[in-house]
Image (cartoon, rainbow, N blue to C red; front, side, top):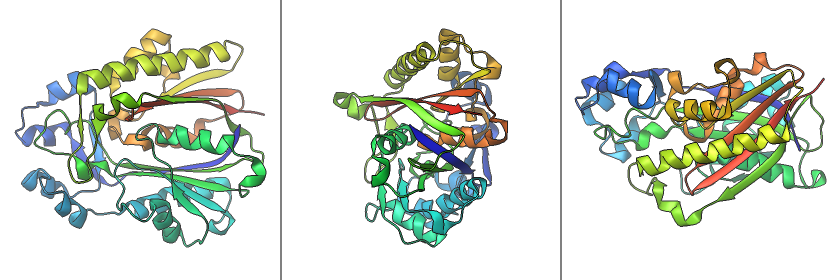
Length: 328
């Protein structure tokens, strides 16, 4: 069990529309994109003119022209999470970060985020690709409360459009940039808590989804899609069995990979449209920040009696599930 005190999110201002992608002349029309992935728009920290002119062939150039660093987007999401928690940066005793495309190999990105908000505390990264947020929550829930400071800041900066090849029509329509932040505690109670954790991995399939140290995102699309549907369905059904009935609202938030994938999971698990929270249609696949950003965007909708099932999958291959419960 882990108490949640605040959530925050940040998305860059630049919008990549389906029309913009069609005008890149890479073989994907607006209709093709909607049919294939169900995404209308996505955000990017890259200048749109840069994408149009270069299709992001040189990853070094992407870092140079990027409008934000991961530390800066992490700081913006963190400040919102702190505000919602009613805390100041000085109340945080540890920072944990995770990203599919960190700015630096060294140091830990958590240190750069902590510096952005002006605190000196223990910092480290915990990363399992798109399932990272759930893994971070499980790791902290497994710790003895006395081993942790009262408040921990968990940040997930995903400015992944910097590693997308915009001449690759299989990847270009999928990704958008987003950053999430959460203030959690193992010892200070809150009305919001994560419980019912489970995680696992299939390392023999590590190469199905990858971002090389110097290279663009790549995946085996059909295999990954099948994995995401099967595992997300399994995780959600497990949570449905653990929490069978009698709750005011049972909601579902999954990894924001592909709207078609999420709809298939909802159909298999009999989740209605109103009980499915998502942001994939307007923000694209923002890696490990997609699900927590969705939760953050529904911050004002959370109320006593809610049970929000969170089921995440990622490269590695990894998967994790948890229940966010809102008490009286």
